[in-house]
Amino acid sequence: MVHFTCDHCGKELCPDGDERRFILKIETYPARDPNELTEEDLEDDHMEAVSQLLRDLDDDALELEKPRQSLRYDLCEECHHKFVHDPLGKEISHKLSFSKN
Ligand SMILES: [Zn+2]
Image (cartoon, rainbow, N blue to C red):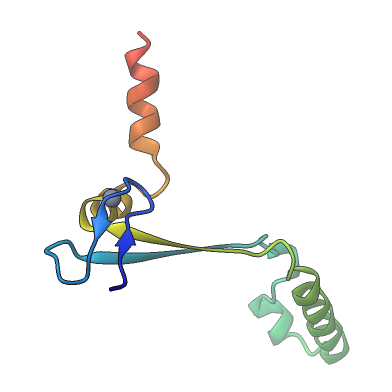
């Protein structure tokens, strides 16, 4: 029987049990705002500039392959619930910094 454990708390998640299993996928990659097409680019009749911009975007897309990170986790229902309410763990770090006082 295939069984999973929660990647956050380690709880066992067997398919026949009461625990529901949640998949968490995280994808990160560098933003590329400076090269993004704006409406101005498209309104002006600068076809050469726009096509150059599109070529630049293609080049960037190739360069960005490496820094792209794709992560996948299995979570139990409780950890999933915590994650969707505080994806970046901000609440936890706030509590820790307050407890120092
Ligand atoms: Zn868990």
